[in-house]
Amino acid sequence: MKAACRKAEQGFSLLELLVAFAIMAISLGFIYKAMGTSTRQVADATDMQRATMIIDGLAKSRDSVDSQGWQETGEQDGFAWQVDSEPYGTGNAATGAVRLFKVVLRVRWSEGERPKVLTVETLLPQRQPIPGERIR
Image 1 (cartoon, one colour):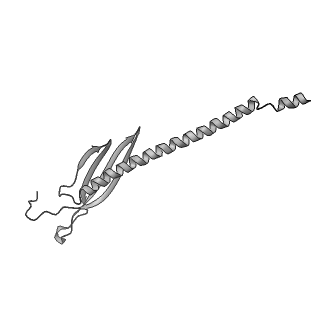
Image 2 (spheres, one colour; image 1 turned 90 degrees about the vertical axis):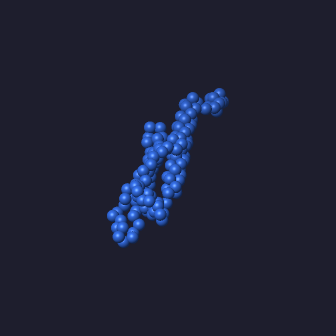
Image 3 (tube, rainbow, N blue to C red; image 1 turned 135 degrees about the horizontal axis):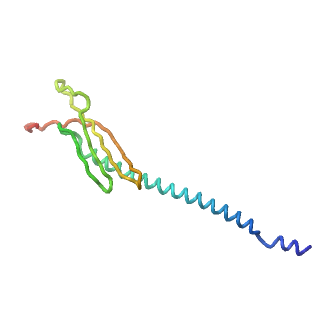
């Protein structure tokens, strides 16, 4: 009888070890997936922040628009940007109202195979001529 008790107390069975390894593998898989998702989200947030900084710099570069509007494109650090404008509203010159332009600022970048776009729209006034300046 003592021999049977000793055999039962000698350690883990092969089945118990396989179950423990399966649980550990599943747990590690979930942890790996969570870490990968977190890393991707940090990269997405960093790219969005860089695109926002580009748009902010473009918006701060001008406080008004020429009468011809503002059309410009460029690239910065792998981010392609584009500025387009068009007159906003009718702008009655007889009343002395300032003419407004709708300005659309876009930044494009790709993350792997996924293209991303950040678009911001704002209104800017038409630049008033300096006294003595010729208007085209």
